[in-house]
Image (tube, rainbow, N blue to C red; front, side, top):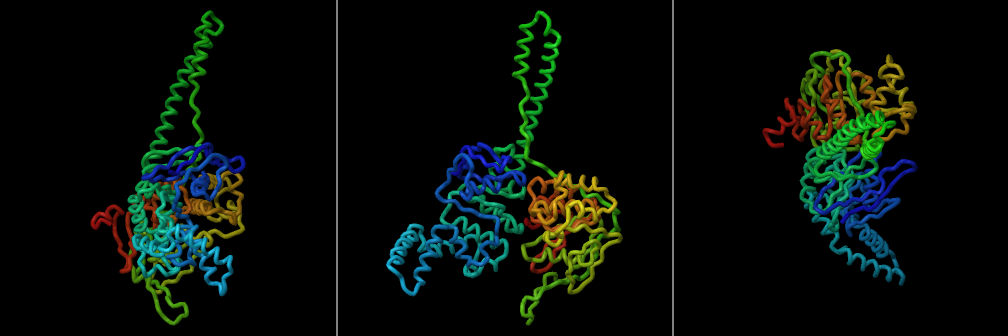
Length: 541
């Protein structure tokens, strides 16, 4: 069983959650949700035993598997060793034992310690650890040929499968997953959904991917109102339930306030008369009917609206036979990997093109190639190997790069940096846009040097809103956003009347925004004129 009893966590005057008691039952998959800063990662660390709660207690199963956000933490280690590290006690014993065996001469103390370590290894099934890890890896689609490789040599989807093998090593009763879909392509996300659906233990997962939560979760544990409330179903079910509860309380309060007004009118009319007993009775009823307090939600949803300046010409973008590759030999002796093998297309004004494909296939390379001579885009220096790109008449390109370091220079106040994108705007207007993106009060005076990933994302959206582009080019815009911001972005892209080229692994955004699909494969680029649903229909993709 995995459960918390009367758990509290606060930082200074800020209460994340207080006196939380909840249970995570076997066979159920819980999505841990809440806005950025609500305490999701903190609560996950408490469940994992990595952070001590300030009050209360935690009941944990004997063995838990933990999948952390950092997919690059094990890049220097062999794949097989990374899996075995899932049993920390065993791994530590193996490392210490091997270090003693490597000594030129062993002391009596070394011999006694080795005996102790061999006992630990035996108790933890260490003598079959490599074969057990290999079985897990094979079962999760990592072939034997990769088992001796370094983690840094693997692709993102392969890394997640190895780290999931690490979490599963030793047959854990519960899995704790922190943003498992980060850096995964759609195929890998679908695989993970199917895997978790078959897993028999308890799952607690943090994710900003609404589609993933809806597909995977049997329950949602939502951090809000300084507590954690469980809801049955996926994320959308939770949102609906919260709205219904709040709507019911508001309706009941309205009825109570109406009744209180009637009672107060009677009290005022007859307070000085002879009907004192009736007046007193109504005063007691007024006290009883006081409206229920509506706790203040921590949820803050930004308001994103991309206004269109000049609409531009009929065609937003035309390109012919574009090609781009990279040298595969670092020493310059030859070898060339062709990423874009000759692609020709024409994008009409108002089209919304989703660029799809597995990780490493060249989605960002394609975007960067198209942007090489784009108006208003200065942070890219990529040159084509061949072909021609022509942007449309009066094209105004707004670009969102997944690399914040290149897009946001250091040493600027936020208000000052944003002003260049709409020189005619007043500081009040700029602060108004920033307020829509949750930069309020003195936050507008922050320096670009101290921004978090989520703040950097929101600042780039402020830039695009001020720029008023007629073409949006977005490379993984949902990274670092919480669910509320992702939903707000989805709504904004659907309302936007200009042209969009975008790369994302958020399936809801692809499904609800795209009117055209460019699917990159090893054989080239498939250009499908239609929605994501239409694209999936013929072949069951």
